[in-house]
Image 1 (cartoon, helix red, strand yellow):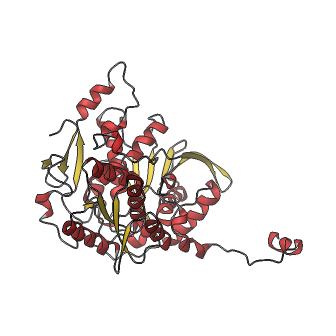
Image 2 (image 1 turned 180 degrees about the vertical axis):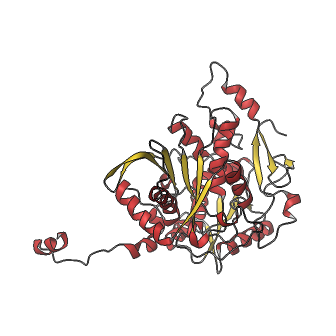
Image 3 (image 1 turned 180 degrees about the horizontal axis):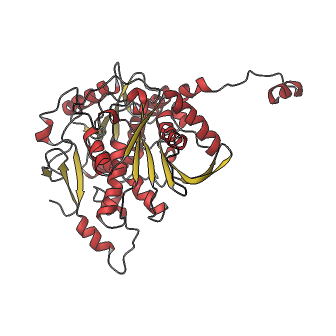
Length: 411
């Protein structure tokens, strides 16, 4: 093993050096079925004893240089763009009434390409740079694609993005404007995912696909480090996370677990997985004897997944740390987006609003204790997908340039 980290298969437990494997466990990948979540996703294991010892020294900084917990070897390999360090807001009122508990909003729409996915793309791109890899491919419903396109542009790397043709036009536009090669696929996200892997193997591209590439989980976990720092290690009681493939929630868990392993925290918050009712293939199967996939149908395209690629790791985390989960309807998602915008001034896309809809459902059911700290992870800007929310708003017709018509609208 290297001194810094190695990989371990979550299915069979076999360990690998970083230069021995790129993606899934080679042994478990042989048994994967096309209609089931892949087995053999790799977990990154660090030398926690060494890190714990280094931060326990009298002259050490207890806040830690988190680069020790990243699967990289040179800080200069990271993009010059500001990744992470996103705002954390606290709100105490809802619909004009003061709340007996606290709500925190972690706004990751403030990343360079306006989504949480930049955290993963930054680590994948840096790893490629450290290994003299110039072409990175991925499959995406839009956010991961625009993310890797933007990060690659900053690193002078080439990005090739496979997307379902039905992805929101704003996201497709963003991918193209960064100079990436876009390959629209007449099919689902899962079709684009499988095709991107096939093409990557044929051409020798480095593939960023979520969970398939273990470094995506490592990038997404950095949000947990930030939350711990911003809250001075007094962690929230609950964190609401939008869930599709299961990689974001696994990253959130992994970040807190890393901090637990080095002794900076003594417990992991309750993580609440929120899925759209029309795409609940992860949460519906957590305790099922047999995995059964149903076709996804939801306005929340970023979490619309038929085969959650990180199902096994995400479900294991939820069960191990007693996480909670629920589903919300498309109508609840759109209503949540409007409420959030008007209460906080943050406009978030449907997949992200799903997490806030989950929080609102908990409030309706009186599930929050007084003085508890409840956080929502907001993962993408509402400007990424304007068409969905337009069914819920009314833009007045143009008026004559006279005060009389202004009064009609104001009334």
